[in-house]
Image 1 (cartoon, rainbow, N blue to C red):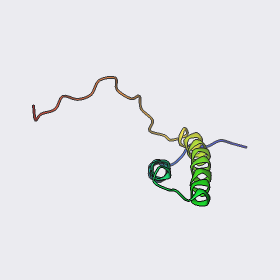
Image 2 (image 1 turned 120 degrees about the horizontal axis):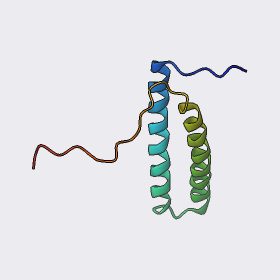
Image 3 (image 1 turned 30 degrees about the vertical axis):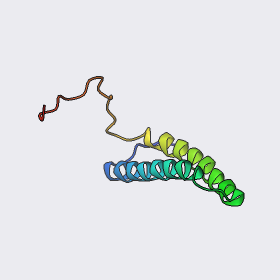
Image 4 (image 1 turned 90 degrees about the vertical axis):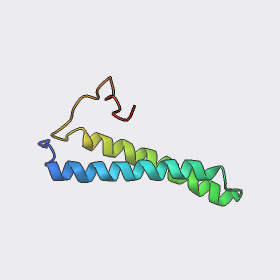
Length: 81
């Protein structure tokens, strides 16, 4: 099968989905500490495991994005200081 890159709009949509899934994962992990019902806690743990798998799959697809760039080592200086 011929591996093609992603169009820019597909890359942006995939980036949004990846961000959303990452936020959902963080929320599920944080909320597990507040839940006392074991059935609900088990369901939330299953969601965490599935989210980790889904994020890995999305990252593999995102690697074909046409506009990847290196992450800079230094951050910009704040203009407020």
